Length: 144
Image (cartoon, rainbow, N blue to C red; front, top):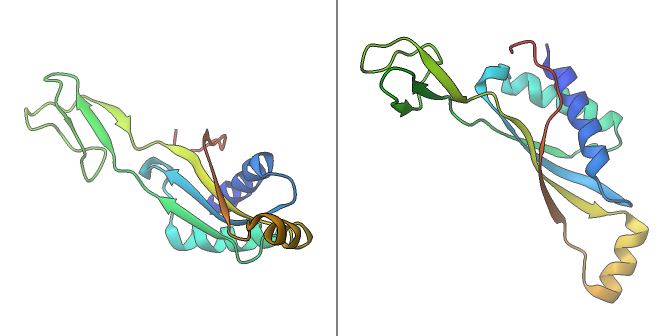
């Protein structure tokens, strides 16, 4: 179950980008089908890893972009159901343009309780904030 190592890698990546005195509410990642993520296993791994990190109850949103291929014979680009789909011209030689993405797109955070009260009273900042980074994930996949 490689989802556990992926969840742990995401925790480490998020920690590097989490602002001081903030608590993670939600993280959004883009994981291509090449990584072979099983959604139920990823959810279970995230729940365990995020609780261990002190972010119990935080959510992980996983977006799965489609495969994108280009035929090396005719140049046609398309989004197949599976990566081994042949081009309509009959050629089997394709270049993979997408499907191997692994990126942290955004994190939603809440200020720590003592800071949130002060900020809410003075500045009206009691709502979650979203930080969008577009940081490429560093997890090494065995599928590559």
